Length: 394
Image (cartoon, rainbow, N blue to C red; front, side):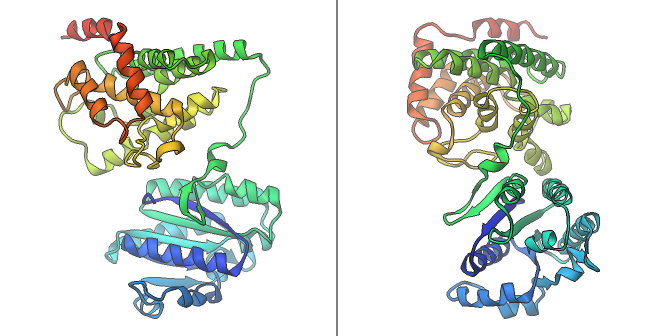
């Protein structure tokens, strides 16, 4: 599981709750995080039954205050009223204290069903969960939100789930599809008209991105054209080809959230800068979801730095978890990027970039996509026009 995440567990039994709490303990301790559990002590104490054979003792954790159990009245609910602003402030201060005490960060978990049972409106709870998302992005905080699915209706459970990028299932933590498939506005146009609108929007976003002058060569266009060429070699349908064309043009749109000097300064990025960089696929995904792009476009943008062995980012997806469009964009992006100069390195060149995708075929990159890419170059595809553009730069 990634550090600094916001996860939901919709449990339906005491066994499931104990398992979730035990996972919270193990994950937090493995990161050297201070642990706070918001809820009754009776939720945590039964976890003693599940700690046998693990390298920690619950009594020792409580004694050293590595783990603290905080009652609802001292956390979520005050005098019977839920105050989300107060709770977020409490978590921010707790994160600062944890760092000062020598921990790497703060791990929090809480039985959130009590918030709804206090009379809090769903709208207030959703705003709170959105604020937790912001807190997790900005601070070294990992949050585990626990909800008893037997005590809330199905529609409320879905609304709650959609506010959490990760979910805890039987197999462990995973990307939460509810979060990334939340409803968004649509247009009442036929498919052809909608694609025309989306193409125009992609071109406009591309022009906006170019204003930042991050790349000397036409990187976005290169990725778009190569992705389209790969799709053609794979005999994909025209709709998918159109989606890849658009996704290539906007795949680095999330870079707009970064400072220009981060991307143009020679040398390696600082730790915070590297963390921001690894978020750009998420930012690009969220921007693209504000437009009625087909899902294939948004997911390709979201996944273009994922690798089939799970070593990619932002979510470490593996194999079939990565869409075909995401796999095509990943190969297109790495070949285009390696072929040209970057401030932090000399250009590797086209031959080297193709050698690299062959070297990691089947481990980092999907085999059939690599083979289609090589075939595209064998059939005459090149970055020739872009090379001329790059060579003409001072």
